[in-house]
Picture 1: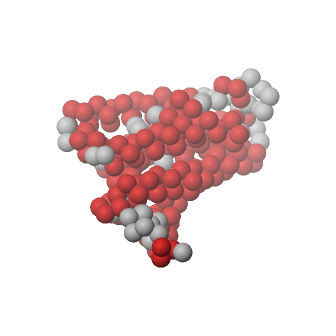
Picture 2: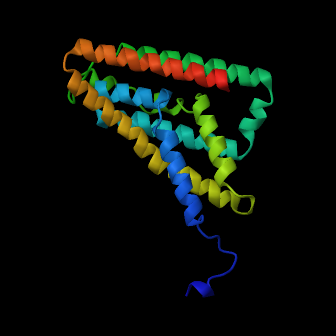
Picture 3: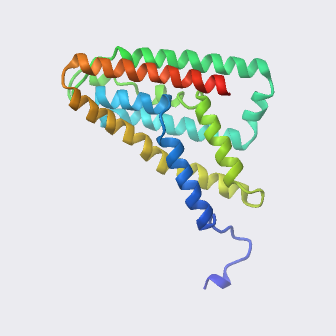
Length: 212
């Protein structure tokens, strides 16, 4: 019986707080940002299946930085202006590089050679570690939903929920990109969509850096 369980066993996060966490993650992960713009463009160019390795890299990178934030290492970096400035510069440079790849990618088919060159796991891995929006999401989630008494449990739940719900919201952007590509039809229109999404990636990153 539940009453016979040892008292020291940690319970799951209270249902009300977990519901709020889930809504927060869906809202934060589903809004436009560099990662979602990249997924939409890659989904339209290469299809949702070939976008999965990139998405997997994004989720691993996000989870890694979430745990670094939980350990206080991101706060330590933020306290050193030189390190913070270097990280922001690296962030902007990488997003520019990724935007260039997306803007000038050739549409591929399931069996086509262009599709085989879709950005993979390693390129997705660095999207969130170099993304100020990701830091803001993580700090907000940790400060609101991780309690001192059950910190490790709460961080684990937050991390897993970001992967499941956040990853699902991210994948919806890849599916939306695929739908846009089908509606666009002509390669020239798809190129215009990719250039627009790449520009939005850069613009959203600049806005995040200015706010940070």
